[in-house]
Length: 256
Image (cartoon, rainbow, N blue to C red):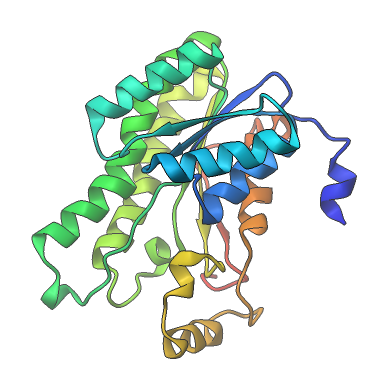
């Protein structure tokens, strides 16, 4: 298949990629794909068990590829510490994928202040926190790729997701600003907005919601983590050097 032909492509050899929310789902798929193309991976997850599990799997395929880090991305100080540790361990940071995300879905009328804060702090502030942790290093290197994982929800708005949609739409503004600030330094910043992807997060949705979603997708099917990982690998590569400040929807046509 496609991945076999890519085995010969080692676009990320001698590069270090930090992937948040890499314990499972889309983040795990992204980490695997970048590792398959030669990157060393800082596997970041909220829990030690999840970060360890992904790192072990990557190291089983290629020894000495990955290291696990457990941190809550919403905690600015903890993230600065973890970022410093990653830079101490690997010596550089070439690709940052801010993928960590949570949902607390409910209609706005019922949404609590806590539901709002948890989602904004993890999905939006978390991306800022990790970006701050590696930015000086990337600027010094005069090279880097920042890829923020948004959502079709941030483009369209989805009922019951005021907090999630706002957090993901917010990533677009953050990313475009970073793209402008860093354009002269060889650093690009882009958003990938997944549609409905088969993960633990979407598996918990009711059949009715899934059917409703499929009806809105021209391709009439859900995507896979590998679809998002392929887009990340492209934007992280040297081939995408002239692409910055963009929001790329990988959603089977749902948001067009």
